[in-house]
Every structure is written in structure tokens, then in C-alpha cells.
Amino acid sequence: MNLPSQPILLTPGPLTTSERTRQAMLRDWGSWDGDFNQITARVRQQTLRIVHGEDTHECVPLQGSGTFSVEAAIGTLVPRDGHVLIPNNGAYCQRIAKICRALARRHQTLDYPEDTQVKAADVDRALAADPSITHVALVHCETGAGVLNPLHEIAMVVAKHGRSLIIDAMSSFGAIDIDARQTPFDAVVAASGKCLEGVPGMGFVIIRRSTLEQCEGNSPSLAMDLYDQWVYMNRTTQWRFTPPTHVVAALDQAIAQYMEEGGLEARGARYASNCRALIEGMAVLGFRTFLDPAIQAPIIVTFHAPDDPNYDFKTFYTEVKKRGYILYPGKLTQVETFRVGCIGHFGDSGIPGAVAAIADTLKAMGIKQVSAKALA
Image (cartoon, rainbow, N blue to C red):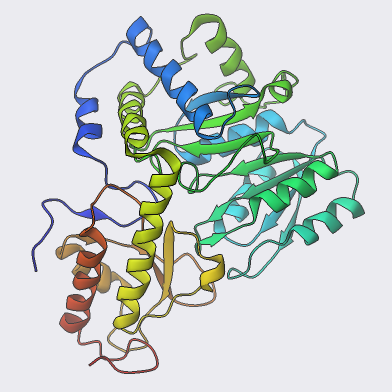
């Protein structure tokens, strides 16, 4: 088989980026320079445009991985006496609960199995039963298993009860529709190195302007205070502290390519096509998906590990990597799995090439039993 010129990252971020995006990082920028400040302003405007939030929301960028911005959103939007409800069907929901504990924010979880969608009716009952709940923190696409949660239905329930909704859209933003004109939310959190196909190192939070105006003094942190970041940026056009200049410049170029491709509709369609090709190709090899197709997000797919004594994930990973593709380990607690991402800039041959690499790896490892039936 023909190996890619460099490994293709089949992960939910970092992911494979375009040459044009990487080239954008070859120039150095002054962090207070007017040209760089224009790049920051453009990124903020374009991310608002993706969710149709120009009239109602503000984009506040933040240095660091996506989790930094999730923590900043919780710390900034939830007051010290707030109470957060966290629908929990995976590892990233559990991470929000851990953030709430670290920030000393009262919280409770609404727990589901890892292969089950959050149900809007359950959120409705929880909010009706406890008027002390002030915020709901929802993971849109729970990439622990790949579940797509019903954001709009849950948002409408939260709005009906007059509570605040914070959306972790880390793995969905830019590929799965979130429309601020139709779906009420106070904050949506995303990052540079996901579906916009930038490089990792910067997150951003899109916050309802009227909500953000009330957040002064909430954050227990200086560096992660989104209110303070917003006020300073509006006054000076600059970041408060040294920005990840190369990451911002790369994201600016990545967003330009995103718009040229056709925006959310085209990006989402490409990832959906990748997901279908992956599931179909892996099924031919005997692999079973962990999730029901009805709740599978087109971002990352969890597969049951081969039912064969010769299977070992570390060896499997290493052999697939030798053939040019980097997979992700499983993130489930009850069953052995591995994950394959569907996002990134790798062209039409990427998924078929990955399936071929996995088929070759199975032969090299002597794996004959993938699921219920032996490989031919």
C-alpha cells in the first residue's frame, strides 16, 4: 500500500491540517501589532458568523486547549452561588463536573450510559424539580464515544425554565449546525484545532452580550476571566497577555479555507461522507460500531476491539501508524474499544487508505476473529 507523505491524524483534534494553514505559521507577529490585532478581530467576527451570533453574542478568545475555555466559561458565567446541571453521558461531561469541583461551583449530574443520548424530557424534569439550578452545561458531541446530543431540544427546555445554557461544542462547532437565531444559548465553547481545521492552542467562547455584561467579578482566576478579556479587547483591540500568535494566524487561514469550501454545510457534508465510508469499510472487515447509527455524530467513531487473543491496542496502534495513520484509544470504562476520527484535511483517499491500513495490520498481527465471524 502507498504510505501518506506524513501520518494522517484520525483523531478528534489535533487533526491533519492543510499546507496553507501550516504555511501561515511561518511568519512571526508582534502581539501588540496592528496587523495582528486585525487578524484577531477577523477571527472573532468569523466565528460569530458561523453561529449567526453577530447581533446578540460576543466571541472571546483564550490561550490554551479547549478545556481551558470550558473552564473559563464555567468560571466566568456561573456566579459563586450558582448551581450547574450536567447531563452526563461520557468523559467530557465528567470533565465539566471535575471543573465545577475545582472551581467550587455547586453542581449535579444527570447520568446516562455511554451509548445513550441525553433526553430533553429528563432535563425538563430536573429543572422543574430543582429551582436552585441556574445553569445547564451540555456537551453537544460527546467524543468519548461519539454521541451527538439533541442540542436544540435541550436548549428550548432550558429557555422555557429561564435558566442559562453553556454548550461545550468543542467537536461540533463548524460542522454541525448551531444557530443562535433559532437555538437559545448563553455560551458556546470551541477551539482552533477541531472542525475549523486549525492547529491546537487557542479556544474561544461565544457569549450572549447581555449575559457577559453581568459577569464582572465571577471568575476566580485572572488569566481565565473572559469578562476581563472581553473588556480589555474592546478597549485596546489587543489580548491581555501574550497571545498564541502563530495559532491565531493559522486559524485565520483555516477559516478562510472553511468559507471558500462552502462553510458549515460543506464541512459537515464532508465529515458525514467520511463517517459513512469509515463505518462501511470497517464493517467489511468485521468491525462493529459501539453506537446506534441514529445517535452517531460524524466526528469520531468508536469500534469494538477485535475479539481475538492476538489483539493488543498498543501493537495495533503502532502497526497502523507504520502504515501512515494515527488512531485514538477508546475512552470507555466498560468495554474495550478504539476510536477513529472522521475530521481533518486529508482528502477523499484518507478513509479508504485508513481502512486498508487496518486490514493490513490485522493480517500482520494474525488477527482472525474481529467480531462474531472470522476474517476471510
